[in-house]
Length: 107
Image 1: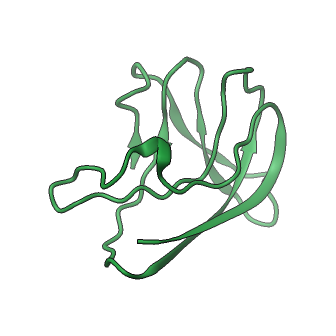
Image 2: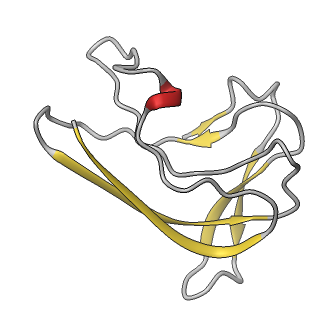
């Protein structure tokens, strides 16, 4: 799902056919705010969770960044911790070709 509630209505999902070794989805964004792709998966406390992916950034301004992040919700859909403190991968800024990144955490 594309989450654009904090993006002032901007952003779209794109598809990079030239990405190697396989085409990849991405986000295109041209304004201040927050934009992310979300996948909802049922989880259980006490287990270790891993996430991996590839990121590419193009023409990102000084104050812009991209990263992978795991955010956990409670049974009511609320965050179990502040999103700023939730587990995340490396921060990418500026221009980067496709780079693999991963993270893991214990819930």
